[in-house]
Image (cartoon, rainbow, N blue to C red; front, side, top):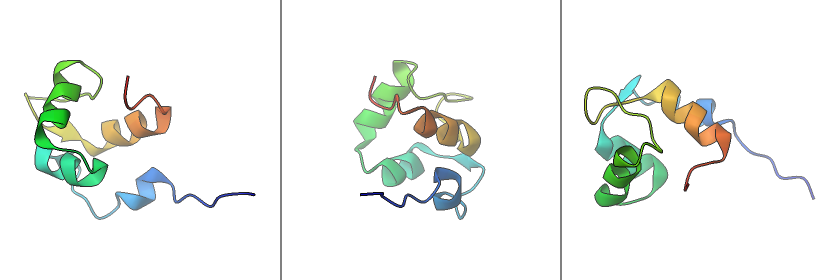
Length: 68
């Protein structure tokens, strides 16, 4: 059976180009501590501390390496 998946870029189309950690929490459906852990571990790329570029999040999600 073939599953239809909406491309990540399309799903995030309404989000700003620079995301706050709260935005990422909502997008990923995880808690604040998990987002900070992903950033601290270097798994989720962040700029200027805790800002995440939407393009980087899309790339990260597309790699399939989301949970280390």
